[in-house]
Length: 360
Ligand SMILES: NC(=O)c1ccc[n+]([C@@H]2O[C@H](COP(=O)([O-])OP(=O)(O)OC[C@H]3O[C@@H](n4cnc5c(N)ncnc54)[C@H](OP(=O)(O)O)[C@@H]3O)[C@@H](O)[C@H]2O)c1
Image 1 (tube, protein in one colour):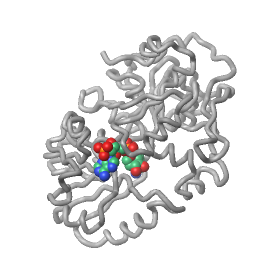
Image 2 (cartoon, rainbow, N blue to C red):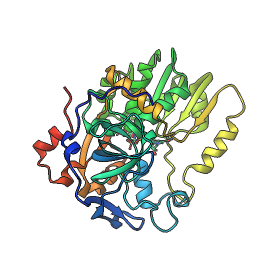
Image 3 (tube, rainbow, N blue to C red):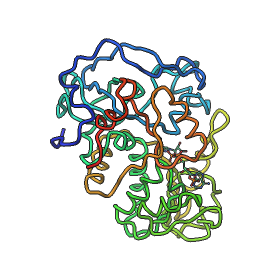
Image 4 (tube, rainbow, N blue to C red):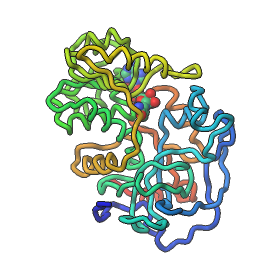
C-alpha cells in the first residue's frame, strides 16, 4: 500500500507507550430507539488479521447514524438487525491513533494518526479494516479529520459522477455535511461556476466555502436557472422541476432524499426515478457511498493542498450523542456535528484540545 510518512499532529502520541486497561468507555445500544442509548464499560477490542486498533480521538454524527439508532426507515433493519442493532457500539467514522497493528497489515505503524470508516467509533478504542483507513492530512485537527470519511467521500463521489470540470454546478443543501464538502471539491475539480443553495442564515457560510453564487431558497428558486450538474443533498424537488433546470445533457446527482418515513423510505421513488431517467439525454445518478481508501487518499491530498476544509458547527461528548442525533434530525446542522471521544478518558478540556491537535 502506497503510504506517505505521517507528519500530522498526532491526537495522542503517548499511546505508543501505553497498554490500554482491559475496559473502555463506549456508547452502547441494545434496542432501536434513542431511549436505548447508554454509556457502558466494554472490553478493549483487539485487532485481527488485516485490522488496526485505533485509539479514537473524534467521530461524528451523520444522518445515517440516526437512522441506524432508530431503525427507521424500516429497511435499515433488514441490513442492520431485525430486532436490535447488529453492532452494539454505534459510530461509523473516526480519527485517532493506531494503537495495535493486526497481522498482515502493511503501511501502518503504531502511533500514526489515521482516519476512515469503521464500526463502533463511539468508544475509546475501535477496530478498523486497514484498507478502510488512511493517514490523516497534516493540517487538520482530529475533529476536522473525523468528519471527512462519510460526508467528504460522498461529496467526492458526487462530484466525480457529475464530471464537473468546466461545468455550471449547483449544490442543493450546500451548508450541510455533504454539501459543504461538495462546494469545495467541485471548485477544486475545476467546475466553471459553483452555486450553493441554503437558508438566509447560511449564505455567508456558503460564500466562504468558495461558492461563486449563493441561492437563498426562501427568496429564490434554483430550478428557475439552468445547470449542467445538480448535486442534490436534499431531494425536495420534483423530477419535472429538475428536468427543466438541467441543460440537454445535464446530470442530476441524487445524494439524499427528504422522504425518510415508512418502511422503504425513499427507495421506491428512487427506483422509479432511475428507470424513468434511463431515457433521454439528461441523466439521474443515485449512489451509495463506497468505502474505498482511494477517496480518503484524494480527500487528504485536497486538504493538504488547502482546497478542502471541514466545518464543525458543534461538538458533543459520548455522554450526549443524543444531542447530536437531535441536531441532525432538525435538518439545521451547519457543516458537521463532531463527537469528542477524548472526554471519555477524563481529559480536561484544555488537554483535550492539545490531544486532538490544532490547526497550525
Ligand atoms: N448517498 C449516500 O451514500 C449518502 C451519504 C451520506 C449522506 N447521504 C444523505 O445526504 C443527505 C445530506 O446529508 P448531510 O450529512 O449533508 O445532512 P445534514 O448535514 O444534516 O444537512 C443539513 C443541512 O441541510 C440544509 N437544508 C435543510 N433543508 C434545506 C432546503 N430545503 N434547501 C437547502 N438546504 C436545506 C440545512 O441548511 P439550512 O439550515 O441553510 O436550510 C443544513 O445545513 C442526507 O439525506 C443523508 O442521508 C447520502
